[in-house]
Length: 162
Length: 341
Image (cartoon, rainbow over all chains, first blue to last red; front, side):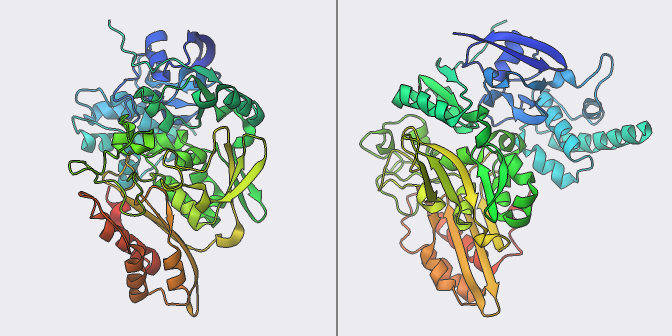
């Protein structure tokens, strides 16, 4: 038996009929076609499916779609604007913070969440925070550098706007 | 394109908005009902298809179960409060930093955003034989697969094993015991039952099939932190293989009040070494009135592991637990585990 859910995804009203057992990540990918959010381990260990739900970073394989009913969801697709990458994405490109790219959406979302909470993290804080996510190509050094660069860019954005 | 769904077996899903409604559902479905808190433990069971409940009762939409309030000089924490909320709450930081440290030691940002305090203390054991669905004592069978000559039992119990050698994996449990927290339960019959955190957890000798005193239909409502240990000197340490996404091999939590004549009073609990978090009563008595010195710590630590019975692969937990107890008593500037990132 399915039930109707309605939620905001990347600023747009979305909805669908889901079975209660449908994981949020599968709803996003299969029903909304937002395949940027990746399914890695499906048990909350790898972080590839990290998204924001009501502003909080979560692993979307550890939530049922029905639990996101009424929530505001941000996925990797919601970070960039047409024609322009988000500064965190830009930094991952500049610093070669990805190899195969499978873990990248999760890392970008986790980095974005970290920088919203803590705009100027130390290297240790970055490493500790991103320990929630796994990269099997082990590009960790470049990922940490990318987060540092993104922090600088975002700081410049903020100061230039005010 | 092939669609991979990894579906869990179907279930009915309920989101009651009051505890009363939740308990009506729990009564209606009985043994086929499953209480859902943050879902981190629950979804693992469902995805592995070891547990196949007919009805999930999600407590996430009951306003009364959320939030942190001042209560009788201490704090009352709703059972569905997330670990992330705990970590950033100013009153927890100021008065009960022990609980903050324990909550912060739990997995990662994502998990702390999703996991709840009530769920963290009520989670099932992670013994991999049991989690894989083997018919062990805990699952209603007639043997322990973790305590055979071939068993891999590196993460299992060294103390108080009784047929089952699984351990309790909660990080916040020993902190709550050290803080003398009270667990507020609404029984299936609707009565309020309040128990000390220490009594909330049960070992296999009492009931081998569950980890807490919760009876079917009971709901953990809140956790109350009394003023008793607010602002004491705290020590928390969790040792694990990997910094994130890993359960404790052993952990210690303590609250100590030190006066001019030495330790006035202390509460100390360990986890990851037995089926329930252990309050170390003998240690608390031994250190009273003594200086918080190396020799006190040594004597207490030896007492703490008295009677330990390691299995084939977990003898390392004996010196590990001994060292954690020592550090909790005499303090440590070398607790470098959390700094190694």
